[in-house]
Image 1 (tube, rainbow, N blue to C red):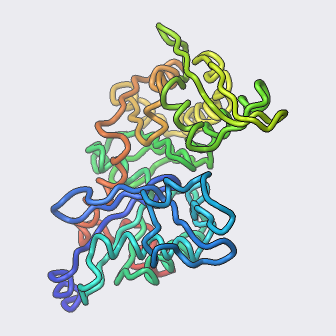
Image 2 (cartoon, one colour; image 1 turned 135 degrees about the vertical axis):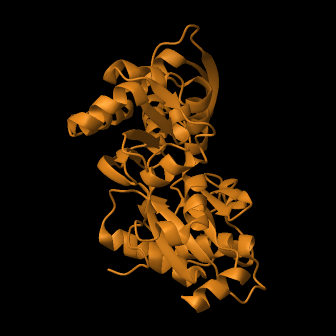
Length: 350
């Protein structure tokens, strides 16, 4: 313990929100120091990262959907869990060294937020990847807890705090009290599924094929969960699946809302299921406390409205919803001795 404390003086310990779409890194006392896409560019058929291991994050995202046959731009996490062990390790190594500095001899301690619904094997994969990427010690915390702390909810009090974290690969719903999760649900549906729904709609309706990046742009610019006071339109370009030629069409917010209906319905169902399983006293607290939403998916227009209509609770979008989980991991890191016994797999012992 004493040695670890001494080493801590010389290492830049960090908290990581390892997301399907984006990875954010916080450093104790400095806040968020890195916010980059969870993308890695490699040589086709290998795990060799391009540009001497530097084609990670923002650089790699620019290559998505535009790579020649010899290059693959890979997102190594799917549905909030690791789908490619070696590429995830390379990505974490790049991010850790970028923040911590390659010349520092003392490796950092790292707190990583993970979906609450992942298996023990998937948790082990995260720990192994982080250790091999350069972490001295790895602590895992469930995303809802990190999001609640990052949103400054009173999760340590004897009252209910409800968080709905709609990420790229997963949606986490949890009701917390006394520094622990009382009830939670985790589904592997999120922003990526909304993008896929947009792609499928345009392909089915217009015979137009677009990529993930363009689908995300459509969702952001005209997507909504409920009717808008003034409906929107947008031009979108892609490849005609019949002629094979480039083509441009105009689409409306109404049709995109209809396309997003299925993933949004799944999120609403998860929220209501969680509430149905909540203890009566905690459910009563939520009448006054309401629910808080965060994550990129919470930014979809009228997402708060449709959740309020479905549950009868007031819905608050947290301040800076994209970074609440990362901010929470930073709080855990700053108070490691206080929190480490409550963290999942505390000192990664099973």
